[in-house]
Image 1 (cartoon, rainbow, N blue to C red):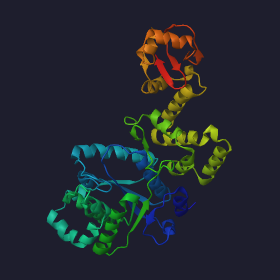
Image 2: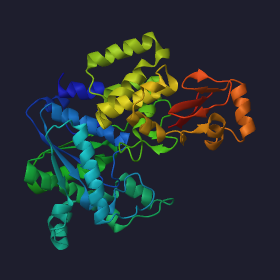
Image 3: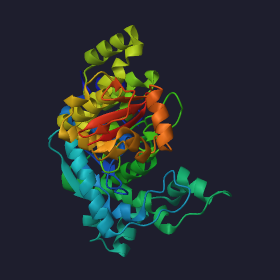
Image 4: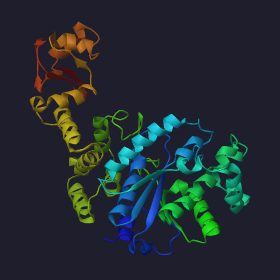
Length: 404
């Protein structure tokens, strides 16, 4: 499948300055993708864009990943109602390292170049920048930006000169990358279209070069109509310190039926034939949630690796499926202990239920046992006993205690 066809099939096409998308199927193009280092990890919303960039790389185009050390010190004002807190250089350096590592993982070892716009903006004289760059950007263009209009309106919080200048700074990135790396295409999210067009205009005015922009749509949860990638606890991060591998895996297991196949197109490397086969299996037996299970496995493996994925899959099957607790490894138990109450071995079942907060008193714990509400390692119990080794205590369907 050609790149233009793949992008359309996967739902990665929003706007582009190309008259015909098949131009992407011709000679290799040097392109760049900008990342705002406002955090040290991508969310799964960011990851969708990273997957789109990978398809460009897989089809032979040369990628330059720009981590915005300079623009990150100002903060992208697009979509923000208020001025953002400014990041320090140390914070940006930490965030840059975390994001770059995740992109390397997402690109599967494929070659790409990483640059930081702080490296060139820190060397530019302010007066020279205004003379050589600022004079090429009409004020009407900058004032017409949506974020400027919203911030200057009656209900807006106003806008600083720093944020107002953001699109000019980002636009010059395109000029610099053309000069240094031969970049003639910027790939961006739908919310960056305006900033990217500024770069195209600058290149035409300053270098006489025709450059292009390609934008991908934001991923929307069809069931809710809101931006995809949020849970009740907030954003879903790729960093396991922010979102555990288990919670990451569970997120994909619990996506709705309507979106599961679309997410398989966006977040996996499955071919069209593989996705169509998965869709057929899912429609034949929707109760099995086969699409969600495959999606969880594939995305978790891509982000966190095969071993971690298999570990959380075993944990999930032990909690909610037919896997025996004894099948879990020590690493599996470590992962599980981060997700459910964990009690040291040597205590009775009654004591464990109270310590874990499953029962409010010893009497309530005994009543739960006598009522058949408690199981240990999958077996219903009717008497209290001391748990001297690792065990999984369960109340009902969704309340667990790990004893180890």
